[in-house]
Image 1 (cartoon, rainbow, N blue to C red):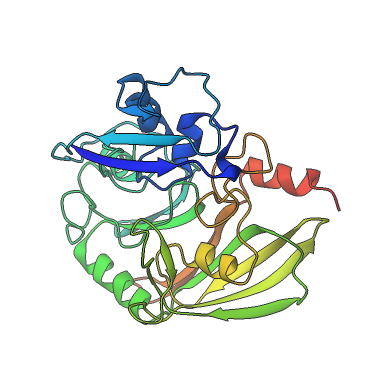
Image 2: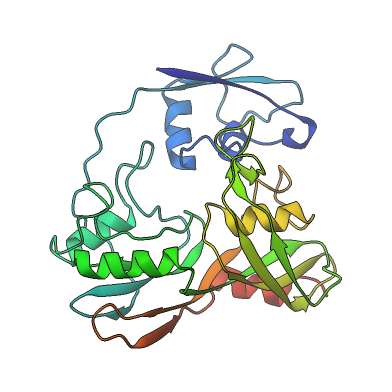
Amino acid sequence: MEQREYIVEAEGAGQRIDRFLSGEDTGLSRSALQGLVAEGLVLCNGKAPAKSLKLKAGDIILLEIPDAKPIEAVPQEIPLDIIYEDAHLLVVNKPKGMVVHPAPGNPDGTLVNALLWHCKGSLSGIGGEIRPGIVHRIDMDTTGVIIACKNDMAHNSIAAQLKEHSITRRYQAIVHGVLKDDAGTVEGPIGRHPTDRKKMSINYNNGKSAVTHYKVLKRFRQYTHVECRLETGRTHQIRVHMASIGHPLLGDLVYGPGKCPIPGLQGQTLHAGVLGFIHPRTGEYMEFTAPLPEYFAKLLNTLPE
């Protein structure tokens, strides 16, 4: 069993313990953290906390994570928003809160579980038993377009296009602060954070090259609606790059403020809106668009201008 200790800083004061831990990038979903609290595996200052406990600055949180059980991806009947499908691949509009593939803390209920049911096991095997069909990923709280491959030919083709940076990927995001320039480019190699191994950071020693282009879509009083175009596809790339220029994504508790200013907002405000690629079999360029999720559109209509 792994033990981790966290000290509550001033910005974490007033939060419930499961909310606080969900912002610490533990690798566990909030529901998994709530389960550990209920099982008595989370202590506050050496005692099991009441469910309603509000944390204070200086509180010491001890999190015990049970040893991982072997993970097996099994088919599950989970609805999918399929934008396109043929014999070689399918394009899915992933909802917020859905993990792409099984992992410790998220053994089921993932996109892979849904794909296994929908495709009746007909998925590429290159990703292994836990990631069949998966050639690229988007974060749990990021919505939008993602490709799944049904055979190894398609998988190899899409993987090669990703490696060559020839795939079109455009995201929409809401960031903290008002961007001065109408457009810009962020360049900085991304690798593991030197002290917090659960996070990524701009890392000139061990990072991989990363380039993000952004343009302003609309300015609000305290936020900016932007489109981000990826040249590369590093883990958490947009989240790290926008935070590095002082404009972290709204709702991002990992790279932004420790407390979200919008009540009820779950995770970063980031949507994979456009995905374009050369079809592995036909050689035709295809481009797909996923509409903004309801929560995102509502934010754009309610943020003060």
